[in-house]
Image 1: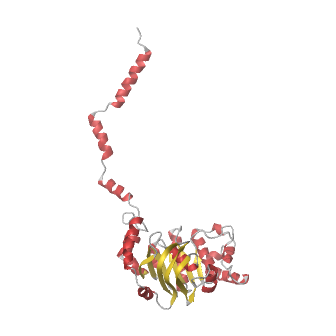
Image 2: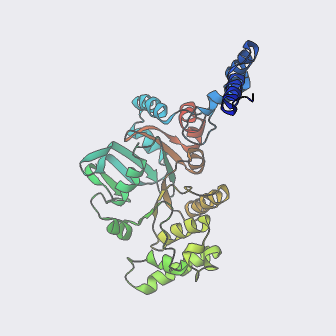
Image 3: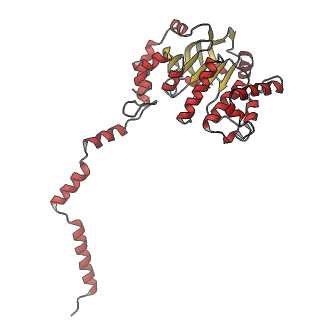
Length: 329
């Protein structure tokens, strides 16, 4: 008599299940060993990949942002005196901030902040996120609430002036972070926007022509929409637009942000030219601490709205605390 096909199929299924489940003790041990065991090199690689950092160093040498802020705060106890700040401002002191308390709404970000810079010098502000670096620029230009203190430029108290008044009367220009050009407008139209405070359109036109004479890269594209420019060219246009009002002080917020390395070098070359050849006084915030300090005459390290360290840019690059916390080792 033939076997029942249903019973036969059930027997095959049970045999197949048994074959899958059953493993020899040797195979089990080998499988477990293969999963658990890691080479020393792989262990080290895994350990390194869990390290997060701040600044431009490799992940094997930098520290977490929280740890940077904590250690930087301990350094702030040795904050520089105003006498040290005065010494760093060589020649004629051009811009002075005295015991400034400033912030947004009722929130105070800067606490008795002091700054000194000479005419034609450059100063770079570095520090952890939230330290108040951009607030310094905003306060100088008039974007914050000033609770106490003063801002003096070339003997003129500009503390309570509006941004427009500071640009027109004190020659202060603010160069925003990237993406502030008008992409549908031509390069020339963007430049002319920088001269909106000029009494006569002809004055803005003449100032724009001076910019074109200085930068052929923009002159060659004067009739093109600004949206077709490369990242470096857009940054050049943003800087040049500020120059139309012929300012003496340039506040530069993150000049390297979003740029390829070759464009970063180009932008810092332009800023160097404006300082060395045109005598502009430059105060910048730069997250690329190595690049900013290598450029600047003076460097301030901000922590929690106060200056923790102040020195020449070159000396800060050699400072072991600054190197460990902000330069990647």
